[in-house]
Structure formats: C-alpha cells, structure tokens
Amino acid sequence: MSAFASPAAFDAALADLAMPDAAAAAAARARQDDLTKPPGSLGRLEDIAVFMAGWQGRERPGIARGRTAIFAGNHGFMVHGVSAFPTSVTAAMVANFAAGGAAINALAGVAGLELMVVPLDLDRPTADFTCAPAMTEAECLAALNAGAAVVTSDLDILTLGEMGIGNTTAAAALCALSLGGSAAEWAGPGTGLDAAGVARKVAVIAQALAFHADAPHTPFETLRRLGGREIAAMAGAVLRARALRVPVVLDGFITCAALAPLAVVAPGIVDHCLAGHCSAEPGHVRLLARLGLVPLLNLGMRLGEGSGAAVAVGVIRAALAAHDQMATFAQAGVASGVAAGA
Image (tube, rainbow, N blue to C red; front, side, top):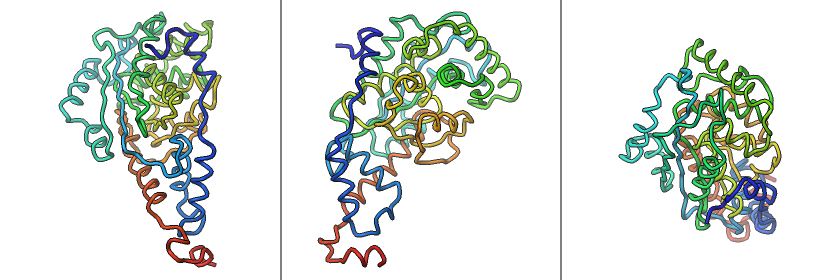
C-alpha cells in the first residue's frame, strides 16, 4: 500500500507529525549528567545521544541497522545548459554505485550503512520547468512513494542522498519559491560551472519562478512543479521516516532543499533530522539557517551522493558509544565533584 495515495494523503501526513519519546530523551539526559565527566563536556555528542534516544524511544540508543538511500533522477531543464556535465552521467554514476566504485560505496561501508540506490525513470527526464510543471500529479506521487518505500520500521538511522545532473538548479528554484529570495541568491556553481554558466542557471531559475508564480504554493505543488523525481523521493522518505520515528541524517544542499516546501507549512518537519554537513554549495549555509539546522561537519564537500551524511554517521556512532559505554559516577566509584573538576 502506498504511503501517499493522493496529494491530500501527503498533506495529512505533513499535518500529523509524530513526536519523540520525551521520557526516553529525559532518561538519556539524566544518564549523560551521571557519566564520569563534567556535565556538557562532550558538547554536541551529548545532544546527539539525547536526540537519538528520543526518536528511538530508548535511554541507550544504538545503530544496529542503518541505511543510506540514494535517489537518482534526470531533469528536462538540462536543455538550457545549466550543468558542466550531460544527463548521461546520472545513469553512468548509478552503474558505478552498483559496481561499488563510487565515494558513497566506500563511505557507507566504513559507516556501517547498507546502501540502497533507487533510479527513477532516468530515460524519461522531468518536463522543462521553465514552461511546464516538472511532474504530473501521478509522477510526483510515484516519486514520493518511491522515497517512502525505502523506510522500514527496523531502521535505527537513515541517511539520504541523490544523484541527478543539474539538480542544484531545481534545488535553488525550490528554495527561492518556498523561502523567498532571488534566483541569484540561491544559485551556485554546482558541479563546477564558471561565471557564465552560473548566469545561465540564474536565468533559467528566474524563468521558472516567473512561469509558476501564480501556481498554488502548497508543498505538493511546489515539489511537483519545480522539483525532480529524486528530490520528491527524498521528501517522501523524510516524511515516512517521521511517521515511523526513524532519525534521519540529511546530506547537502539538494537533500535539504527537498524539505524547503514542507518546512514552510510544517517547520517541525526537520525535528527528527540531523544535518550531516555543510556543503560548499553557497546556498546551503542560508538554507540550513532557515531550516534551523546546525551541521555536524564542515569539510568543504560538494559531491552529493549522501557522502557528507555518511561521514557524519561516524560522529553519531561516537556519540552513542560514549553514551552507552562510559561508567556512571557510582559504577566508577568517583565522586561527581572530582569528575567535574570541583
């Protein structure tokens, strides 16, 4: 059965967001305060452990099963020359994922994550969004449900990523329409455009924004008009993960942009999400601020593929290991004042 049978079902899911287990989070915070260290001395590692406890519903959370889901799609606006690479690279990279030769294969492996790659009609790009909605209603629902389908209740954590040549253009358009600002404020070099290429991208985004200016600005309509299949799939995965209380680690600009239309009407959509890193794509800093997310890492990465999110899982595992394996003051026979430096 599809998670989102209709736009109304998608809207209903967005209006009824699950909440974390407050008792489990409180118990985890109490445990943090009783571990053999000065309170707060592990900084954000402590907060990560409490966050995971709340969403997993247990005082001592863990990651026995983690998954990274990578969605791939192609875009009709590529006819305007907004990328340094052709759309054929999308399918080539999906083949590389299957062969185990991409960065995400190595990074998911070292993070202990199972890798799931979902190509979405690569031989049938979305419509050119400068003169038509990118997707029909049925196509957008299919993409949302493809995303929801990767989320299972037995997951302890889910990381998300994408592959789609040109999709920073769609991401910038989604941000501009959802959050305000001009095309120039959201557009960046993507895979390495020069100044002339960025100018073309800005012009294409501005044309799309003008074409869709009078359309309903609901989350579903914004996604279907300006998004791509891989972007809508990530939105569907995040929303389904929320229903199942599976914590999510977001990747870069494009992954976060999938949530921009949703956050307009439901700012709490990111409450079960961690921002894995801050991408080198210029718009990501602004987008993270608007979503209220503070990235775990800032390594100058801009690859996509869920790569930054996968690397961040190492930090999350470290936070959970400290939370679970450290002794309490009573277990260690240490006075709390001594550990706190009193």
